[in-house]
Structure formats: structure tokens, C-alpha cells
Length: 275
Ligand SMILES: [Fe+2]
Image (cartoon, rainbow, N blue to C red; front, side):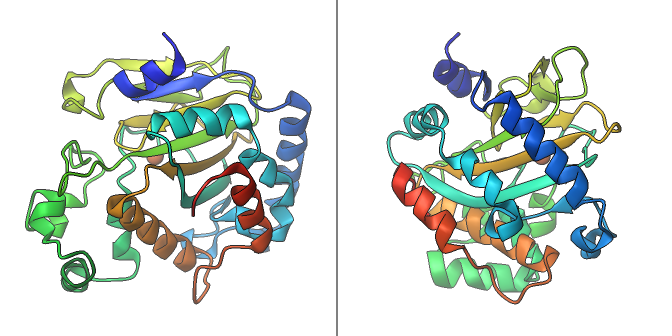
């Protein structure tokens, strides 16, 4: 099946040979060295070996190449219906591997900065939305569950939450099952009805999954390096997703506000990706 068709029907795909293997090995060496210093780890996550929003830090200039692949960006534009917008997510990590099937419901990250009442007020004031319209429940607690089908399989005011998570492993996972597992089709169907599939990726390949698709990491250890970002179809739901992600990374990095680097903006401008 071709990549676009698979992405739409099954909610995931493996795009082969996007980045040169030698570049990925260079990224890997850099990441291992970077996280060998405790100060570079995430203090608010108990010194976890993760750097959220890494692309906006000069130490990660190397990674600007992630956004320069015409092959990747063209596929994503097609999948999103033409225009493509960066979803303000770029995480790097070593041995951070959620082993339980979950979805990446980004809007829930608004809880990094607000309580339930503040979220409800904000949705009403900025988007004229009730939480019932957005989440199909009036309770944030009911909605904020990554292991359940609270993954936006429905339209909101005629719009779809269409966000693609895009990742690359900096080591081979074609001969083991420590890479990405997905529940095929769970962006559309209840996840309990979906078949579990392993995606065997080689260095330089890119795994893409719909943020609504249930997925899990196959294993950790051995300095398992993973880098992932997100893009989506421009609409108000993507903006909400991005705002939530920005709230998360700003807190994780102990910053007062989210700032995009000009150097990064220039790359996106050149590739015709909105932000
Ligand atoms: Fe995830």
C-alpha cells in the first residue's frame, strides 16, 4: 500500500530512507553526549533524559535537517490536504519509552498551565466552544485519559483534528521489536477492535502516525534514541493542540514563555510550512 493511503486508512506509515544513515549516527552520538550531562536533562520530570522543544535550542542546530526533507514534507502536505502547519512539538530522548498503548491527545496538555475551570473559560472566550462540543463530555477528568477512546474521532464545528506525529529512531529496529507498535485503524475505530502491528524501522526511516492512533514503545535500554515532531492541517483544533504542547514544553523547560528561533522559522518558510 502506498504511504498516503496507509496513513489515511490505517493511521500510520513507514517512510523509507528519508535521512542519510551517517547523519543519524551523528545525531545519536550528539544526543548520548548531550544527556551525559545532568544539567541537560529535564528537571521537572525528575531528571528524565528528554529535551522537549529541542529544535528551538542552538545545541540542536544539526536537527534543522529534520525539516528540510522534501520527500517528508510533500507527503505530509498531501496528507493534510495541501497546507501544512508545524504543531510546535519537537522532543528528543533516550530510553523514554511509554510501553502501554495510548494516544497523543495534545489538547489535554492545557492542564500544564490551567485548571479545569480556566480551560473551560478559555475555550468559551477564544473559540466560543464548550468542553462538551470539544471533548464529548462535560468533564475534563473524563476527557483527559490517554488510554481510552478520548481521541477525537469526530468533527468539531465541521473541523477534524488532523495531527501527524513524525519520528525517527537513531538506531535500527528492523530486527527487534523495540521500535513503534500501533493499533491499526484506531484513529477511526474503538482501539479494542484494532489489530496490533509492529513497524520495523531502519536508521534513516521515518515513522508517521496520526496523533489519534494508539501506539506504544516496544522497549527501552541500550540508549534507545528517538526524535519526534508533529505537523497538522491548519485549523482551530490544530491551534489548540499547539497551544497545549507549548504550555507543556514551556513548563518542562522552566521557561516563562514559548519562543521559536528565527533560524528555525527560516527553514519552515523555505519549505512552505506554516507555524
Ligand atoms: Fe505517544
